[in-house]
Image 1 (cartoon, rainbow, N blue to C red):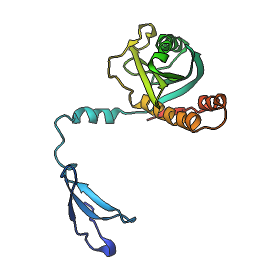
Image 2 (cartoon, one colour):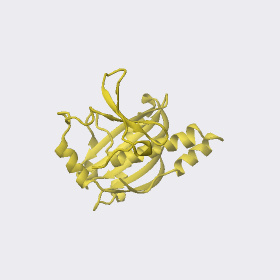
Image 3 (cartoon, rainbow, N blue to C red):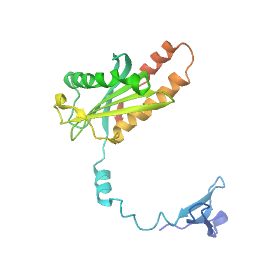
Image 4 (cartoon, helix red, strand yellow):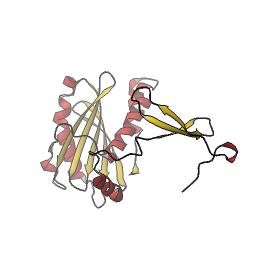
Length: 213
């Protein structure tokens, strides 16, 4: 057990403060080197709420691993400029057959893009996962928002891809790619300079690759 020492080696004097909104009580244990109070929330150290699945979270943490991500280039699909990625779980490979199926699934969805306020730019992720195959199509739409469609199917059977259930969202690896893509869109298109064609070329070249956690 470590000891908390104040400035000059003295024990800090805890200061109790109540939250202005929730009434939660925190204990301030000294300050950081920048003079910022250190607070330890009593709520955080209490019992785990009943809805938290401790066993499932622990199992996920123990098996969490890297997954390979590869950019597959920028394509024109249904009038949209689409940046394509592959994510591969250990032992899985995205081949031409899977890529073709993903592009085929994305086409009809993007054809209706204008009705959803599409601006004509999209990101397609083909994820060869450990429990199945997933295709995500994120489209940048009006008012600085995005539209997301998720398709899924059995592993290695791309012809069986179907729309996912309502509310299905990206997994941790897919979210990592989309986080990069959010920054690439802002950096090159919204904050970029020069003609739109040049901004789009810069956006298409701004990719992420390697192994994602």
